[in-house]
Length: 257
Ligand code: DAK
Image 1 (cartoon, rainbow, N blue to C red):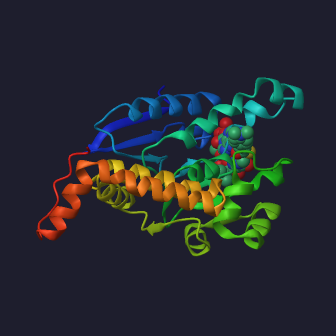
Image 2 (cartoon, rainbow, N blue to C red):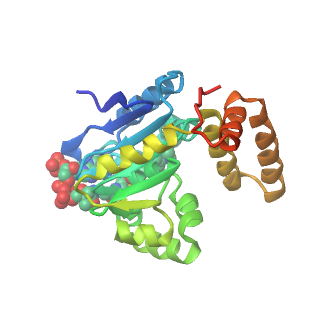
């Protein structure tokens, strides 16, 4: 069975990637993550793809890493195999990656959503970092990314209790960008993705990179990087087209160059 389903042109320039392990609540075993990383690599070199939407099914985005696969491992085995390292590849995808979360996004599932550029949630979505309840801690970024998103106090409360929280709370805390009704959810997400896909792709990717720098760099360096990227857009045809179209009061016709 395919664990990752890819539809390249769900609408022009938007690819849909679905995690497909429904019986196990989309638990993320190494095979799922390996297939996902392979799919992202392919989409990175496919010029038709400008925006990727990562989703699960209505019941679960993903209920975490596969507990069966790791329950009996020793520290030495975990460290030596370092098989979780492949997760890092997801954060290196240069095109916009939207997490569309319906149902459960728990543990590594919620962390996978946070590795994406932003999260859009159906109103039935349930988030949580329940790792402490099973004797471990988040290992795919939640202690850092969730804390950046919602602040120390809320992050502590959520991760030390492991309690689940709904889409609306995640939205109000700043973890989720938009919440849509569960019925018609994917249509809304695809509409949003198409809006981004209609923008000049070089500028979109530069903006994405510059925003990520805000997490990874001191402010002064991030500002310098932003300025360099801003100037670099002036070497693109789409910048000329965008600004000329504005001045000529017409719609721009972007070519991706
Ligand atoms: N792993 C394996 N199987 C899972 C699973 C998971 N995380 N979540 C659900 N399942 C399986 C259940 O075992 C059950 O299988 P069967 O018994 O039918 O064979 C089936 O999915 C249906 O689940 P339930 O029977 O439990 O269904 P319920 O509706 O009662 O409950 C639930 C749904 C999602 C609330 C519940 O299943 C649940 O609490 N799941 C576990 C959530 C959890 O604790 N997640 C955190 C796991 S730790 C790292 C990367 C990632 C990670 C760490 C490091 N690196 C890059 C270093 C991540 C760690 C984690 O995610």
